Amino acid sequence: LEQSQVEKFDLLSSRIFLGRGAVEHLPEVLDSIKIDGKRYFLLTDENTHDHCLPLLANYLPEDIPEFKLIPGENSKNLENAERIWRWLIECKASRGDVLINLGGGVVSDIGGFVASTFKRGISYINIPTSLMAQVDASIGGKTALNLASAKNQVGSFYQPHAVLVDTMFLESLPQDHIRNGYAEIIKSALLTGQDRWNQTREKRWDVTNEWSALISDTVKMKAMIVARDPNEAGIRNILNFGHTLGHSFEAFSLEAYPPGLLHGDAITYGMIGELFISWRMGHICWSEMVEITSFLRRNFPEPPFNADDKLKLLEIMTHDKKSRFQSIKISTLKKIGEPLWGIDCNEENLIKAIDYVLKDKQA
Ligand SMILES: NC(=O)c1ccc[n+]([C@@H]2O[C@H](COP(=O)([O-])OP(=O)(O)OC[C@H]3O[C@@H](n4cnc5c(N)ncnc54)[C@H](O)[C@@H]3O)[C@@H](O)[C@H]2O)c1
Image (cartoon, rainbow, N blue to C red; front, side, top):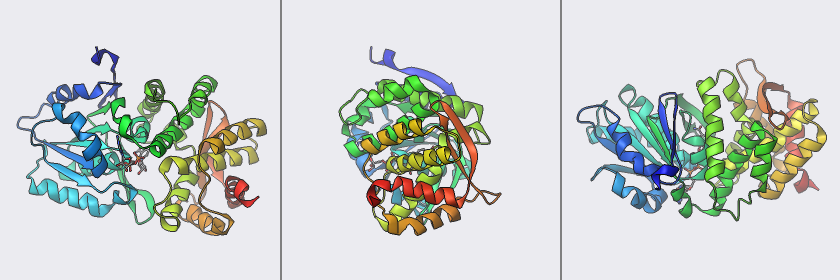
């Protein structure tokens, strides 16, 4: 009965399982990798080891070797990637073996990267356990590491063999990480259209535990875009709405306000700033921009930075984000359901956007 609630579809070379009971399909997923004598390796962090691994135990091979990361964004680095490569070598892992990533976006990003590079690429499976990873990070094959405080500077496009999105894991997820994933659900709804935006804003993220429908809509929307543009040469850029400014906020906060912002909070400020730029450039109308940004301000905490941080933020934006043509490009909205991407953004617009994000703090 449980299994009948699980939706299944293919995205490029990945098989996606969505819904409560998705992990029950793990044995069949492992069997579907037709390599004789293959072995499995498990990547977790301390939290997913404690809270999620026990829920998976019935479906995993016995005595599976496990590598456990310290939780958090700071673990997504080259040193840890090297530790995992070395561990795989010590365990005598070979080309036909399979890495299973059980965790949030940090685990799937670094695990996917390690899988894409170890012996020139081994199979991997994502079992996302945070809302952020379930709706976004585990889907679409983008893998990444941070270099110092610069986000996602090293990475690859490498599709998982399968992704099992099971909502049962969310029961142990702390509330602020629910809010974190909700930010990507909002982004996806805004990119899609008025109906999804209405359904999403009606959902009180801090009260509900009914996430299945929103997760399913968000994953399918992402899958549709990724299938059209797997390597982000064009339309996949719409999914970066909020991310150009957001990554700068995130990187800056890691340095200046440790332990730093959650990714979802950072891209929320990014969406506020990038919508303001859209309005300044004559794309979105004032009332729609205010409707969306007010909703975001009501549902997310105030940014930790203040007016004194403005120059440093601008420096990070202009340093990290210059594209090959030396201009900064953002993805934003013309209106709800009408995304824009590749929008050139000058320094004045960036400064005004930071001011607008901080407007309540300066008042
Ligand atoms: N590759 C992509 O397309 C993509 C997309 C979005 C985000 N990301 C990346 O994902 C990362 C953010 O993901 P995240 O928010 O999942 O971070 P995360 O992996 O750090 O997880 C958040 C926290 O929740 C804990 N946790 C996870 N699942 C849990 C559970 N079920 N119960 C209890 N605790 C649990 C983790 O241990 C961690 O402390 C960032 O590095 C971001 O760049 C990647």
